[in-house]
Length: 205
Ligand SMILES: Cc1cc2nc3c(=O)[nH]c(=O)nc-3n(C[C@H](O)[C@H](O)[C@H](O)COP(=O)(O)O)c2cc1C
Image 1 (cartoon, rainbow, N blue to C red):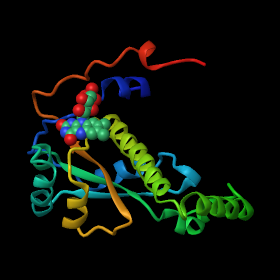
Image 2: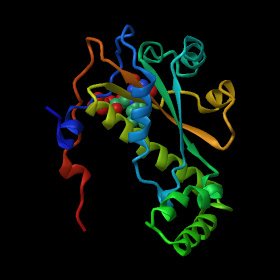
Image 3: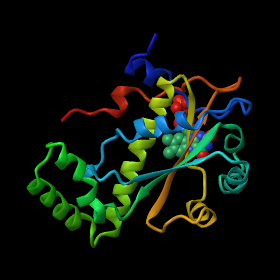
Image 4: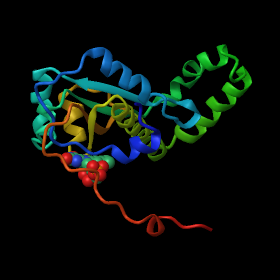
């Protein structure tokens, strides 16, 4: 039986130990990214990019750049989830399908394009913040999608972004925000860890 969203959120764990003998087909990785891109983004910028690391060669390149964390070699794939710093420059084209579908008018599109230009055009910090926000939402969506497909996942911030950009020849406008390992869990992973009490992290005003 399919898990509810509540059950997915309560059962997802950050998996560190993967079964290296179990691979995932490209169509499963594609489906994960398709669902990840259902995440929201400011102005529907969709300022994200995913690199699925699968080959031995790419893993060997990434492994030392992620402090030799074993999941880089053992997971079925490791996504480098990037945020894009220049997506506002393509917003007119990005919104074309929404205009064609009658969701937004051409006038609304132009307003959004102008607003995005004003927000990010001259503001490097805002571009970077937006890239990190969008990539993070997409990464979480990808992990929830994986959980819903019966797969294990693990977010990783322990890597050298500049080293990854260099080693994989990334476009300078693509910022590696997070690694997300996916695959089948091996034995010996922790259950979901304890969280701070809701009353401690929530305030009403
Ligand atoms: C942004 C981010 C970076 C993380 N980096 C790593 C990492 O580099 N290596 C690792 O093993 N786990 C990493 N984790 C996993 C966290 O340790 C884990 O989410 C936390 O301990 C809670 O575990 P749980 O989700 O299984 O309850 C990271 C998680 C996040 C969200």
